[in-house]
Image (tube, rainbow, N blue to C red):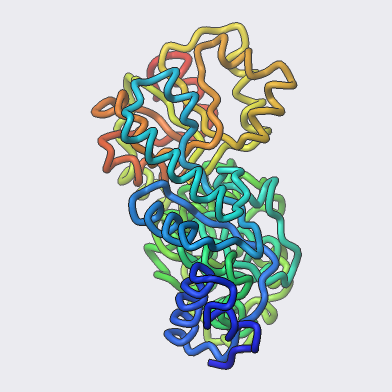
Length: 401
Ligand code: F3S
């Protein structure tokens, strides 16, 4: 593929071994996908996982003195200090998170540790070329903001942040961003939770194609979109979608589909959502805990929780994962102490897929998130999946209907 002189200098090691390694990865990806050239990026988000391969790669690059040209925001690991105080944290787990912290700090990443950077920290404009990993972040920025990113891995997004470029292929090119299948939503969509089920149901019917949704309400909350994005990439791999008349590249059916006018049509019915819900959720009943925030709950949602639990005592443990910003703001609002007085935990920097939840192993919890249930299963956490408000009510009553 064609490389500029500057890109060749990076590849030849003029900017150090770390940058050269990152550039080799970028060129390898470009050649694999038939890219003709690199394009500069303006933003990146690295879905670090604090798991072995991720820590190994970040340490390798930082050990070779790589530095990010474009400082990327980062996904959560866990809040070492908080968990050290509240659960029996294993030294090995603490050590791993500290290694992640140090490697990403040295490499020049933005340590916001949140999987919803598109709500606060890292908001692209239309047509910005970016390198985003993270299941809800990539479709959110592509579909809602009209920015351009392939569905990067944590590792390729980190290489892009270091080199400042991405190979030009896939969703970077306008012709690959068009809809491929019309999804007529005939199911009744009344609340944000319905988008969790919709996101989980759609890939089962369309595979990895780019959906164009019709039949959705004219106003959709950011949380509902976040849920849709997260589940499209839990049950499938859908980094781009359109909502007819709403998202910037789908104001008309012609714009949404471009040349793909012989598109397939599928429908989603109430029955589809009900079937999925029954399949992925445990049965209702007594619960030991509630775990929310996969992806991280928004500021409005934490405020709602505070009003629901104010002056009451929770019967089940309540763990709320959110961003550091949100936690700080609810603290300033006096609402953090309201939730804590009820017995709840508001946690920053933390992901549900971390080795810190052992005290919940083998017990039954409730969550609003099919993604949480899917990933936490391998850690022996089981979930009844219910709408957000019902989960809070469940934490208050110690059981869920
Ligand atoms: Fe966020 Fe971890 Fe869930 S990164 S979306 S809390 S799996």
